[in-house]
Length: 297
Image (tube, rainbow, N blue to C red; front, top):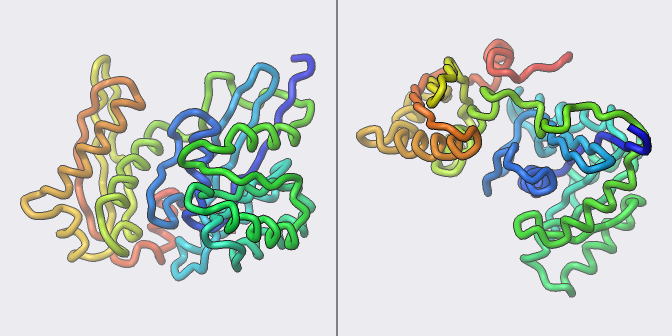
């Protein structure tokens, strides 16, 4: 296509900086789960935005953090590794927290690999203008950003300005993905993430971070999709909490995940959930590979 432009843009930042929220807003669909808890995203997620004369491929990444498990180490590698093969980066930063070690690490990678970047200074809906200006100045001293865009990924304030800045990184190139495609995630992966999002939303403290979801069966019939999934946790005590008294918590998680899935897939969903204990699975290379967390290292 003549005059067509395309490009890959990594969305990077610390946990809970709004990376997945801004991805969903820019793409115009919920393809990445979002919760108030940190470390929600565990894998790279491609979000594809198709315009009349361009295709922008976003690579959403896990938050860069101090890892305590092998899963955490994998997540950090996935986040930093995303910078290797993109045309530009969007550094999402929480304006209420300012510059920190995670941003310092990411900027060092951007500088080393000579990757241009836009700073999305997020959560401005929680700050006054007077409090925001010093943050802009502080980040400006750390890196020569192509642009600094104050925004609220939650409300959409500043999102259009951000998109226009990101379009400047696109170069003449092909349409990498079909124009009706918005993500590279399979239906099984999307369904597993819907379930995990509800676990993160409804369970307290460390328990939801010690869970993973594996879709065991997904049978798509004409009017209904039948899905069976295992929720993997680390301790028997966690299993009883996930199930809840009389199965109440598991039912709550299943109902909410089913409703989300029905809206996304556009058909009725029959969902069965089972809870299994795998001790310390986040530090087991075997379990991490089985659950889809693997890389070349």
